[in-house]
Image (tube, rainbow, N blue to C red; front, side, top):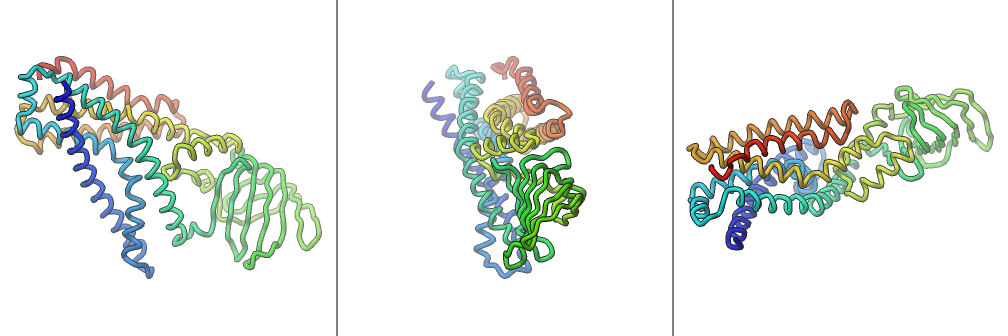
Length: 357
């Protein structure tokens, strides 16, 4: 049995590395073209765009990894079918179920490595990419972060810089808000304090504002403040979760709770990461069973196309379920595990009499 495991593992990882490198090259080239288009009017070196493309590629590879594994399994069986190794193994007493068992273990090991090592590496590289890229976009004018002290916003508008802090968010209201306004030389113009501010488009309504300006205090029943942030922008500020590692995601979730901000998006992303090894296992078994059922079909291209066809269906089903969960039309746990349950059901139905294939 050890001989079988060693041989299957060798073919599996060779196929995985081959497919990974091809996909990485394609993603890198597409990213490079995108960066060249973005910087066409900027005086930057080619090496700089190459560097940015390299930073941005791993996180995209992470999202594509189920497809990479599916194609890996297909390539694995194509090599077996063409070289007749599978027939030799079966003649020696190795059953198809044993091959699937070994591939399943290898897929789980791969999934654990991808989530614990590769994902954390790719998220850190993505974070560096975003920091560098922000210097060349209008997003550099404003910044927003959530900490244990609430929501912090840096905004630049009309040659003035605003530093805004709010303890919580409640629908379209910011609570316990404190604003410091600076001129272009970063001299303090005024401080504004209020218990509540209504976000009405890009012009906020500061209710019962206490203003300290030119060494004098004043009270304003209603003060209007022009910003670059409307409600939609604030709600979408923290959607780039792929730039956060596990620890940062957990910290962000805790900060969301303190801010009274919805944790649905973070919860779903964490569940997605936790279930990732299981997802890869089911993808591997699904691809394996399809290839075993297509063993008698001639033509490598047809086998690959059939696998890709089903993978596209799974991809859109997964995305559809994710959207339902993120909009809270179904529970987030069900939205993450529903595609897995469907895959599990399909696998069980197709595994019937697998040793007869």
